[in-house]
Image (cartoon, rainbow, N blue to C red):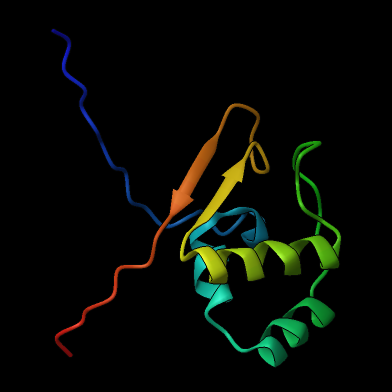
Length: 95
């Protein structure tokens, strides 16, 4: 019987990556108020890295609101072809 092994890799994205394409950005930004999200989108220009990159402000807003609703964020080849990721906030309930 084959066993499955799960691994995790946690790192900070390089500063050269478009932040809107990373799951950590998406899950953190989704916790902001609607006004803060609108302000961010209004003052930021987005550039594509792949044909799957989110660059339209309305699409990015939808992705942030979906992450807020679901409690996690995913990307699918938005930053690099073949790269898929997920981010889930870890909340300290004892504080």
